[in-house]
Image (cartoon, rainbow, N blue to C red):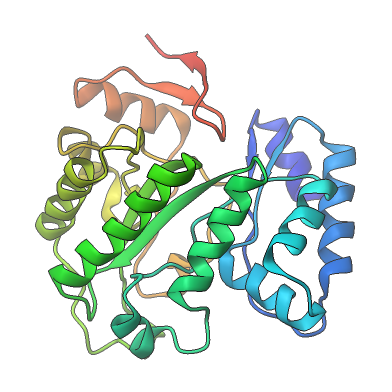
Length: 268
């Protein structure tokens, strides 16, 4: 609650929480957590719990995926992040994501959320063992689902970073390759309005270059980041002025948005 209060104090709008799969924490724990936050901070959008977490809750509670999401939504969950997708190719997932959740389960979580009136984001973590065919397979799946439900607010591609992983023998993708895939995503995903650049894995300099390759969003100014930071990659979390100034230098107009991509403030 102290962390959410800090978010509120800094005029933040979105709370993104994702974690591991803990057999000691059932659905009741998350209902209590989300409802408590929602009651105390009703104007903060709770954008939390990735597909693998929801799948795990459904399995340990012996409930359907839809019923788990409905229960969490009733508690105050507003939208679901795209984490856990990695590359939605069964071939790739069989190597890097064993036991996490299947391609079909990831898609079912997001489709169910959309059908319940919630929005979600789609992600892709690439630059490891995938081929371009695997990337196109991934993009085609989320494009087809978007055609059906129109529930994705954005697509966020980001690159694998080695360090403390079982894939440390893989050299991370270059920034040139990242920009190519981002540009491909903008062309392929005709039904996604927003493509987010990853300044977290690519630095702010490449993030703003990505605005010229099809991205229209630089993501959030995070108070805390614990995923990329656990690798060898040194994450630099910028201040608002840094992001605003970099966007202006790139020739664009900076704007602050909410979880649903409504513009809240424009920095002229």
